[in-house]
Image 1 (tube, helix red, strand yellow):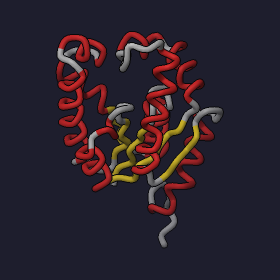
Image 2: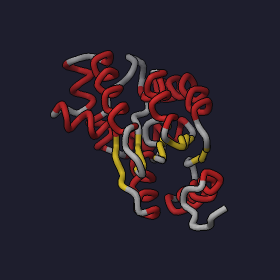
Image 3: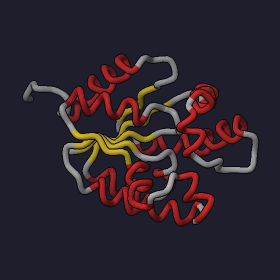
Length: 180
């Protein structure tokens, strides 16, 4: 079984994913990084040169690939849940954790992270703050509908987020050595 992290940009998928994998002794994989490595372009470059539809196809291929793994913590891109095929593939062999974050906090984290700003495209022609709030509002119901576990990362330090994830994973028999 895998643990899949879904959520908006800067909700903590990569940071928490790496920490969670280390804590559980699992391998970590980031679907967005797979796309970038395979195609030798940042996601922003893919959007600019090939368009969003090509990126979503390549993302779908990466999700299909990582969904076949076992015993991994998988970080998905913020829009991975927009395709039913991705959700279907991930739900088959994984516990899905939605990392919720307040839109204003996501925006602040995006602004503070030069890597995110340089590697991630704008999704709409709107100003970045409005875009984040609107995109989050549209995606949040989808994130919630696919999630087995919801963790709000808005104000929690990484260690506390990991503790809460591990606590909730126990009902899936992950992260516990206690047989039932």
